[in-house]
Image (tube, rainbow, N blue to C red; front, side, top):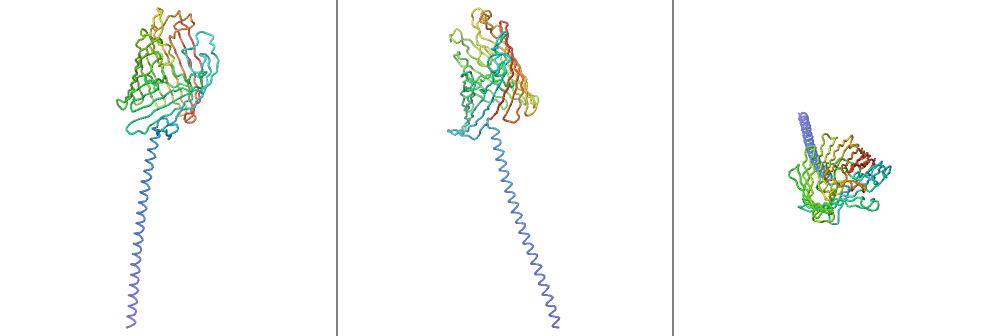
Length: 423
C-alpha cells in the first residue's frame, strides 16, 4: 500500500513538473515574440524617418536645381559684390577668320559701302580677329519687396587702332521693378525675329543698336507684354526718340509690333532743318516643328540712319538743293534647321529698299565718284556645329549687292569661319 502511494505521488509530481515546464516554455516564447514584434515596430519607425528625411533632401535638391535653371546666364554663380548683390559672370571667347573675295577693306560685312564698278582693291584678302570676345556681369540685389538689378557687358570691338582690341561698352543699366535706366538695345528693335548669322556686323535689314534710355515694361497678361522708352537718337537730334513695343507669345510663335517717333535734324542744328521722323516695324518667330525655326522682320523708317544697320544719312539733298528725309523699307527673313542636337544650319536673306523720292542730285554725286544707295541685298548660308555644349564652330558664306541711284553696282562676297567657347 505504501509503495502504491509512493508511486502515485511520484507520478503526480512528474506531471506537475512537466506542466510547469510547459507553461514556462509558453511564457518565454510569448515574451520573445513580443520582443521581436517591438523590435520590428522600432525598425519600421526608423525606416519611416529615413524615408521622410530622404524626401526632404530630394525636395531641397529639386528646388536648388530649379533656382539654378532660372538664374540668368550664370557663368560663374555664387559670387557676391561688396554691396551684397549676387553676381553672375557670363560671356564667350570667340575667334573669327574671313576670306574676302570682294567687298570692303575690312573684316565682316559692309555691303552699303561695297566698292562700285570693277577693279576692287579689296579682292582676295584674308582677315582674322578675336575682338568679338565678350564679357558680362549680371547683378541681383537682395532687396525685400523690390526687383533690383543691373548689367554690364563689354567686348573688344571698339574704335581703337585698326578697330581691333579696344574695349567697347555694349550694355550698362540698372533695373528697378518695371523700370530700366542706362544703355541697352533699342526698344524699336527685336532680336527674337532675327535669323542666326556668324558675321558680327549682323544681318542686313535689322538693327542691333544699343543706346542710352529710360524704359518702362510690364505685362498685359501672361502672354502679352509691352514697353515704352525715351532713347538717345542721332547726335544731331535735339530731343530724345520715343519708342514703343508690344510682344505676344503663342504656343509655337511670338509676334512683336514696334513704333518710333523723333525729331530729325541736320548736324548744324538749325530750326529750318528739323523734321518729323518716324518708323513702324513688325517681327515674327515661328517653330512649325521642334527642328525648324522661321524668322521674319519688317520695318518702314523715315528720317533715321541710327537704329537700322547699313543705312546712310537720314537726309539727302535733291537737285534743287532741298534737304529731304530718307525713307526706306527693310526686310529680313530666314530659316534655321536643327539637324541634330549638335548640328544646325541657317539660310536667310535681307534687303533695304530706299524710296525713290528720297534720292538726291545724281549728277552731283557721280562727279565725286560716289552715289546714294538705292537698294541693298544680302544672302547668307551657315552651318553651326557644337561637339560639346560650351564650344561652337561655324562656317558661313555671304553674298551681297549694292545698287546706287547712278546705276553703278558694288558686290560683297566672302567666306567666314568662327570658333566660340561660351562660359
